[in-house]
Length: 103
Image (tube, rainbow, N blue to C red; front, side, top):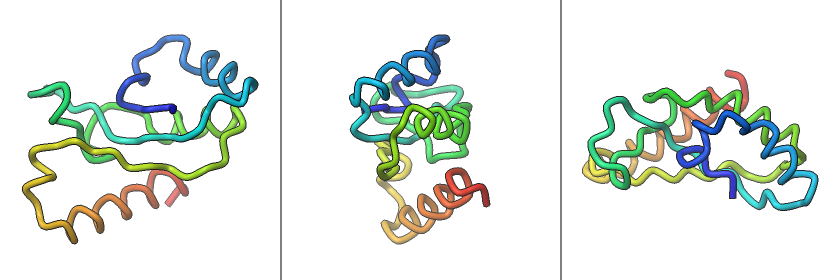
């Protein structure tokens, strides 16, 4: 699983993704964003676009490595869990359209 929250900081990310892709080992792409400051490592993942991860760039690397499957939203967040589920879904889908389809 290429999980943006856990791998975004790796200086060898592009090389590692390429190797995993060549071996057929990328089975999914999980997205959320890294907030600064982060209040809790598990329960403070940001909505895509609210943090510092270059998700569009990472998506290009994942695709270049051969992955063509879905983008899976994985936001563990006390803030977002407290919101209306329709707002969360609408926001997540709009952010994904913007980030992963170029507009």
